[in-house]
Length: 506
Image (cartoon, rainbow, N blue to C red; front, side):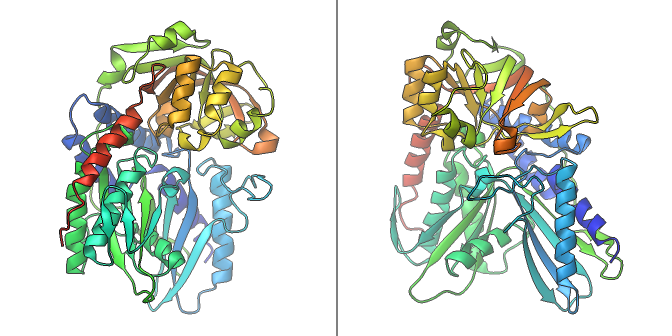
């Protein structure tokens, strides 16, 4: 199969850069249903702009290109050893081209391999079948939504929902809770795959397999079809909303499967996927390795650009270094445009800065929770290819101390932070800004130059500290210096809505 590796490279690039039509239609419907002019509507407009930019630029939709997971069905007699080697070569080449971020990290040393290859990465599952063609399906599921996967062991008590038994009603409560607990950290509005049964390992795998179903398919099991419809109707009553900003749309798709279990175990496993639902598949000729047809290209969508009304007026411009007075004048809900210098910092940087000095002055500065996709040109100059926010909650143990220690005025990411950071913002005169999760191409357009980088060798591209010059970089104040948090308010409101679903339905 001389063209197999080439075909896999095409599959990877398309999956990373081109949202499938069924997913686009779901986003389009969310736009129609969301309240015009709301924060959620603004987020959806940004998402649509990002989807269209990624397609035009052939750049990653989201900077976190996730764990490449391949499901491969082969005819009897296919050489899976050679196919695995070619899949890995295609992954490495896609990484070199900047279509995948360097995401494979040694769990003991923290060293990034730089090519997305290493023990356990990528994930490849081979299955034999009696068809003549090769079927390869790929999902790129980022870390933010992967961290919001959740597994329930029934019976149990669920917060807000009470006793949850080993029946359809118990399963219903688990799924509703799964949507609630993701909040904005999973880049809602999202998609969920659910597995009923199995063991702890097979349950999660089977849940992720549900995400390979077409969004408009019909579950052949009557009870599950009815449950999918119920969840799609009522999960959107929780009010989590796009990016966790509150709103009418919290869930864009729900697919449920079932498998047998041991008598002593009853697991409900939920694979949560962000709005950037990147999955694609191809049928391949087993003789030549050429693509015969694409699996998720059916139908069309009508995503269109709109004017960003929320970013065009009543915005507040911040230019680093920023004064405390400017920060104290901001309140939750304000739209902010950042210009000047910005520094990236994720998990490794936060841990490092707790015990070390910063390589540059951060006084009055902006720290962006971001692991960008970066590429060098022929002259050795760095360029940002994708630059959306990462989930900020992981930095909660460090953030307040780092704000105080270095005199930061702005920290920015997605999904919000907790009570410790909120208290730190109030004490130090700083704010938390929520950028739109997954909008990696949209935000890359706001970066004018890369001034430099620190800790590249030590931590790798995603975890290094990049020093960026930005112009008109938009975000929303969701935690201010007066003790207010939109995230806490939305969590409280959606929890109260969740409690309304405690009574049995089945």
